[in-house]
Image 1 (spheres, helix red, strand yellow):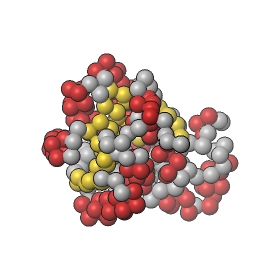
Image 2: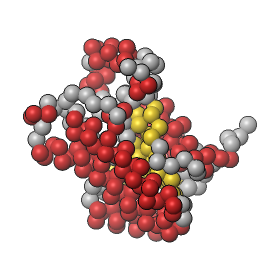
Image 3: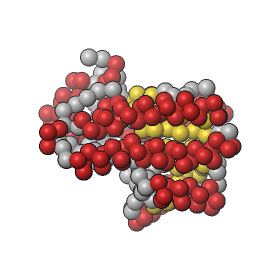
Length: 257
């Protein structure tokens, strides 16, 4: 039995920022498996090339790479023009670029604060704005921002991260307010605690993992591939009347106290 046509994204060009590893890599892989033409983004061309080869080799999909800094508006504008001209009209953008920095708030430096906010929040504004220009002209497009359970919940030691992800939640809704009348759908996925390179230290911390298992109704860490279904829904025609929403994929963590 074939998939329902409402979920068909075959041939659509999709950009995933921060996709050389972790959640971004898993999301890009899922899009490739669904038949999209995927553009991987990061800052290191060599790492991106390895990721491209892995995904293309496994899926047989067309996978491209574009190395640019998602927090640099000049680089983003140049990349948008290049991708549209060389690969095709971008119909899907996944704003996944992110960074974490753990430190007591009294010890958090200005530099680290701005790095977290720029990477997690400004990049989504910058990339979303630039690629939305052509989407608006065509009257269609899907933007998915990668939020977090910290878009809703605070935790000691990561206040700037929570601020960035809370801001991203509201940026998602603001993008919806501006661009939904012009034919775009802008939504977000908010992962819970997933086993990735960024969380490796926490995964190895037996006390934290035990706490997480008690705190999360599903009783475990998430696996990155478990985010793919939510993304395919939000970037496909199935979600054409869904806008400004935050879909929590967190094993029930935000549903309980």
